[in-house]
Length: 357
Image (cartoon, rainbow, N blue to C red; front, side):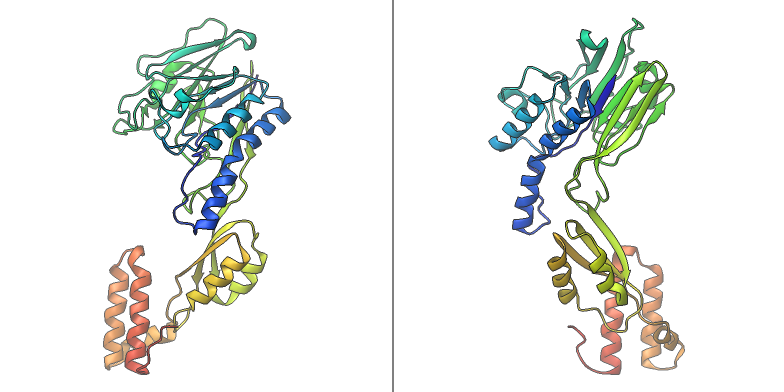
C-alpha cells in the first residue's frame, strides 16, 4: 500500500508577526496547500491519505478556506481520513460538522478510538478526535489491534511523551502494545522521520508550511510504502516558502543577502566585532527589499582590543570590568541588551556622543 501522511496545516493562521500585506499573502498561500497535497497524492498514486489533525488553526474558518480544503480532498482518488486535533477539535457546529465533505473523506468524531474498515485496501484505520482543546488521557490506553490478517493503521493527534501532557499523551509503551503496522501522528511541527516503539513504526510528518522562525527549513509530508517486508518513508517537500535563520559576520551581510533566495522569510543574525551598533533600520530595510520578509538581529560584540582595556586603572576600566562580569553571568536573552549598554557607556565615557544611528 502507498500511503500519504500529512498534518498540522493550520489553515487561516493569522501570521501576526508579519506585516499585514505579507500576512494576508501567507494566508492565501496556506489556502492553496490542500490543492498542492491533492496534486502530490495523484502524482504519487497513493491509495490512502491520513491527516491527523490541526488542519485548521482554530474554530473560526473562512468559508473559502473550507471550500478549498473540501474541494481539494475530493479530487484525491483515494480515501482520506481526518482525526481532528486540539486546534480544530470536533464538536457540533465546528467546521468538520458544518461542511459538506466529499464521499471519499471520513472524519473521526469521538474521543474514543473507532475502527474504519477499508475492505478494498485490506486495511483498518483506527482513530479518534479531540473534542475539546485539551485531552489529558492516553487515547491508546487498553488498545491493541486484532491479528486478523488485515493491515491495521492508527491516525490520531497527540504527543508521544510521558504522562502530564494536556495534548493526548501517547506513551511509547502503549504504541508498542498497539500492534499496528503504522501510526500516523499529528501535533509536532518538526518531521520526526520514521521512529519505532517496539516493533511499531510511527512518525510525525511535521507541518507542511512554517509559520515562524521556530519552524525553519523545508516542510512537507511523508510518503509511506507498506508491504510484507515492512514500512519505508520518504519526505516530500510541500512548502511554498521557508523560514530561515542566517548567522552572518557584519562585514559579509551584503554578499549573504545577495545569495539568499528572495522568496523566503529570513532572520539575519549579525555576528563579529563592532565598537558601534550596526544601523539595524538600514539593514532591515535592505533585507525586506530583497526577501519576502526579512528582519535583522544584532549579536555583534565589542572588539577584543576594547575589552582588554578593562585592566586599566581608570573609569573606563572599571566600567568594562563590571560589564564583563554581568555578561559572564547573564542569560542569552539579556546579552544583546548588555552589549548595547556597554557601547553606550563607552561612548559616553570616551566621546560623549550619542551613538544611536
